[in-house]
View (cartoon, one colour):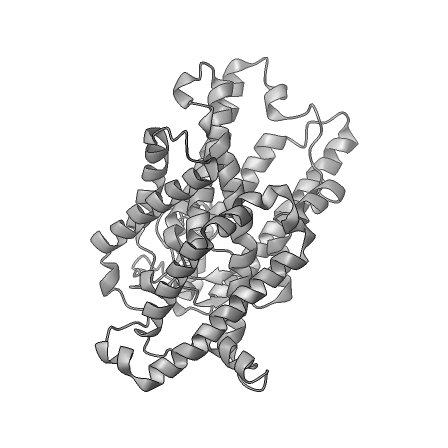
Length: 429
């Protein structure tokens, strides 16, 4: 088989400019952000995310010509706003929208988890600005509906289920995709938003330019990498819409796919990491291990930050379309031209470097710690496997998969290390 170096970037691929804007604008805006003593950390976080979002959207229109890209399923026709069929379907869709809000309210109300103080930034935001959020949602739903070529989407089917008391639309695939997408956003958005608010508060009292030692710089950059990641993540979950071609095409539908994903997040991960995958020991971490060796300490810390930098790039590269358990577009440029899962690889390597599970009070404790971390690595391997199976519904993703198998980083290393075997394989094929 010859190498497919001529892999053609699909027209629907995620614009690379969005990721560049995210990776540069987030640290610059954070540095230049003015003092707002009368504005809460929660509201400043929202304003910051909206500013980054605005820059990302502007870049897509300016550089990627978003309005000319295919795949949104939208076309503006003034007569649609007067069409009786569109108006009737819109009324059904409003019922679906109300049902969606009711389902989310029931989900949050029935789970004790969401009544705790930790989630208060998200729910207080809803309580304070529900009228503005509702106005924005209605404006988006209305504009999208009257521009859709096929307006009977999942929200419409949900409204039809409600109006017919479950007699119609219950078996429609679009309904299943819509409800699963609603669950994805309903679960992840409060979690990620609260993480982002708490990170914003953390950085309000710290400045990188006042750091005088590498350990202080490391601590700052270590946490800032997750702040950058969370900013993109929150924007991705909060702004999924056909208007920006960032809508959910389809979702993961298997129970196993959902389980291996949700296992990595609160509150499930707290239980699993404590009782089954506890690979850390108090007093045994890379910083304590190398504290007396400043050069090695700096090299090791920079290596951790390097892999976290790759991790940040993977989230930024997805831009407006970041999301777990869904397909919202294809990223095939750096770092996704090296591997199909650079995020998982870099994150898992960083855990080994940070926790050094092989350094322990005794040999067998070190073995147990390594086995626990290998268990975590296996969970992420299963996440990657399920994601590939889900995304492979797209012909573009299947072509991308084949390209990475032949031209990804591992394929290049294999060809360089075993050139004779590679030549023999090409002759046979």
